[in-house]
Image (tube, rainbow, N blue to C red):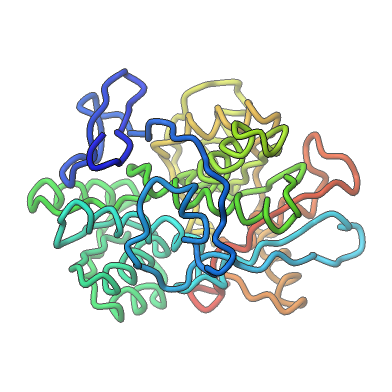
Length: 367
């Protein structure tokens, strides 16, 4: 532990104190955080993510753009009496990634970093750029070719340098990691840095508070790199361990049919996730052919009695249109969870409470 911050730990057994230069284990594996008991003392006068400061591993340094406390609304369509939608695109930069980005940039400040590097298909990069600007840190964001022009404009608008990588999402991550090694910058990775997941767990804490201190039966969550699946699980697991809920909700992870490595591993009963050759999909935000934390997503789904399902391009388009007809304008990736929630869910009973997120604003990308 360093300055009261929990250590990084790896499945191989190694552990490390937080440091700007440390972003993965010496074995090459991803890092998690040593468990910290949850203290449920929400500050009812704070309307940001820091309302749950007692449940977070980082101190509140005053860095905020007003993230958190996004609306939880009823889907209201016939045949969906128990479906609630969490409007994550109401976040300051237009996606749930703000929850993790504020934690990464807070950590970078605590560790004395002056520059951050991130790689992203758009939304995480936008969030890191915005919070870095707020904190007065320089930022360089790596994105794959084909990233929405609106997302690129937003990242540049926050003053970040943008590097477009000719290649896949995995090539983009490799280029960012190389720049980190080259410059010694803080790697603000939503994939590798587990402090990001600690911020995302507030998604679960808000649902718990809004439902009057209860948990829904099922969470339907998009899964690319798995950050929302992992963060939501951590939040409800912490509430369970504190005796505040009986169980973690069943988690149904959703992938686009044309890029579904986790779904393939789940269907085959495997523990590891093999890379796939992705096809073109409008769900660019979850088109991850080789997710580093895919095995963790599989563990979570199986532990909670959930499933991994896929949705077609036509289902995404239909869900996008249905949301728009109800006044909800999301980017195509933001319609993925709703597309799955419109169908009968594995293990779900009629009328039970189901929560799905609307992850990204339609002002960022469109069909």
